[in-house]
Image (cartoon, rainbow, N blue to C red; front, side, top):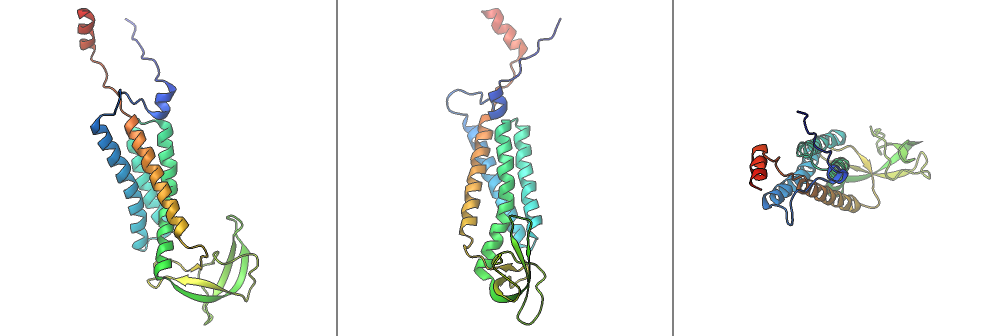
Length: 225
């Protein structure tokens, strides 16, 4: 007897999830979606912030957040959530993981950083967004081990003085003085966190599938008709 192959799921179910319920979703599913979305965003943000506060380099702190994002995406894949929604959570989650450590560093330096003027010794054009990178030295002649891009531009020449911010605890590298402040970075983090939470919530909510029908039960129902 030939086996009956079930038809492939509709494209909408593959991309967005089947959502096999009528009317409002089951309360247990809503609770699960809230837990996954809330815990996921808090874990990504908390991992990035905690890593920076413990003195971990920004690249490694972002890596910790990315690992948390990977866990959330793996859960959605196991739950067979919609691929498009899962992909959106992955992309925005990775951007959030990259943004949180830098936002944390910006606020730390804005709150407790020590400002001083340094002397520019050389200016080079960077490869990222055509940023200019300034090599600088302190007033006593001590060279600064990192090049600064904040406050460094095409108009800056060797011998000029620009502002630099130092972390008194030495956990963060020196940086140039930022003109706009960290407010926009905070807003961007909040927008990304809200988007990741919303996509995760919808992905879990729409991942609900009806359990497979029992063949014996289906045969009894067919005979009773």
